[in-house]
Every structure is written in C-alpha cells, then in structure tokens.
Length: 200
Image (cartoon, rainbow, N blue to C red; front, top):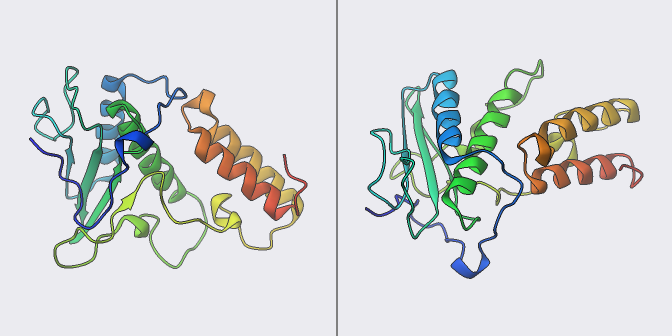
C-alpha cells in the first residue's frame, strides 16, 4: 500500500527527516487522539493514509504498523469542502501523526476563542476544487504566520495582552505538555517580535 501523499507537493528527503524526542505519547494514544479530534469536529467524512496495510478502516495505523515511509496524511470533507494536512518531517510515523494531531487540535481550539476572523480556522487546510491535491498544508512546513496570529491576538495589542497571550500559548505548546519544540519556539519568537525584542 502506498501513501496517498498529495500530488504536486515535495516530500521531505529521508536524510532530512528528524528524530523527534519531545513527544511522549504512544502510537496507539496518538491515533485515538486523532479519531477523537475528528469526532469533535463533526466532519462529514475523514480518512487517514500511511504507507502500510496495517491499518484500521479509517486508515489510521494499527499498533504493528511500521512502514518504511513514515509520512502521514489526514483528509476530511465538511459541508462540501475538502481539507488535508500532511507531515513527513520526522523519521517515525508516530511523530508525524502526532504533529498532524497537534495542528488539528490547536486549530480547532482556536475556533473556540471569541474573536472574529476573515475565514474559518481550517482555511489553511482547505483544498481547491478539482483534484484536491494542489494546496495541502504540510504540517510543520506551513508558511510563516505574523506574530499576532501565532499568539492569537489583535495586531498592535498592548504589551500586557501580548505577555498574557504568550504565557498561555507557551503553556499550550510546551514540549513537556505534548507540544513541539518548533511551535514553542514560534510562540517565543512571536512574543519577542511583538515586544520589540524584549520577550523571553
């Protein structure tokens, strides 16, 4: 079975895949987290893809899945629109699945914030009409967000709001809490940028 990687997107070369040491969750708990998250989103349909036949009917891997290709793709449809998120930045399947889970979870949680935006929280993962494989977001490789968006606050927010938002986001993204070092660093960098270089 081959991985249903979106057409037109470059893969991370095997030699550049990192070993992630910050995720403590098991493959089983991570796949359960993905299934729970998709249930919470109440999407019309979803499916996962790995490069191995050892999968559940949803496409999520069984405990004994150990594909040579550690990439992971999550696709879903909601209200007639198609979405996808993919990751192959890490050398282990579990870490790529965890990265996708964290992105979906954090994005869904953003939708619970009492702010107004110009589009849905999942707009970055929306696929274009047609073949649906051209604009998939590769988790961990998304385009650079402005600092205020990373902190989920208004542009030009006062320093005390920046500091409070950064504290909350650092708690959410800290590697000891299941977050990734990359996301935690993005939050720290965003705080520093919004405080004029004085953030921690």
